Image (cartoon, rainbow, N blue to C red):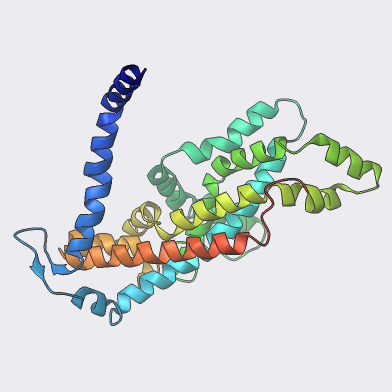
Length: 299
């Protein structure tokens, strides 16, 4: 029996060895190597020069870093809660008992599987102040025309709106959560005279709080790492890669510029580790906060 078990273990390790090798080579090793680089001055060529904590001291006097941090937190603070609300609304729409509901679900989900760089290019045309459809609709209803990308007051908000095109993916997860709620609860509440709004806030919302927590954690991770849409949209304007008044200088974009444009790999590694620590701290805070409102079972 022991021989068979050992053979099975060996065969299993043999089959998963390509994944283990890739995980160690492309995930574990870069993590520890970037930690080492964060204490050095390294341009990407030649040997790194140890400089101790100088890269981390530089963080406090870097005005562009604080601008990038503000832009990133601003985007995350808006995109995450709005994304949760939009995903719940889409899930409720997908859960309706209407004809051809499968077609409607597919249409709502399709934007979330499109490449983000393609959506970003579409958004540039869609929000153009001269010929874009968004401002054309604004003119029809008498609203002022907004330069969604060229105006620093609106450029970050335009990316928040763009992020909602990917709400179809989380909406499917919320839909699974909705379908898992026992219908007997709704029937009992309806018999007791509870209307749709009361049933939503008393039954539906509490029972999908685990999904809400998952969506918040995922949204925080993606929000703090926003890069592609900012890079694509800012690159289409006159202020390449930063947007007007550095309004699209997000944290990961700033890391990219330091690493590959300014050849400051050591400083970029320090920036990455600060982002990791901030992300970890926010995740721990959210999990601790979630204990007061997440319900994992029906009481």
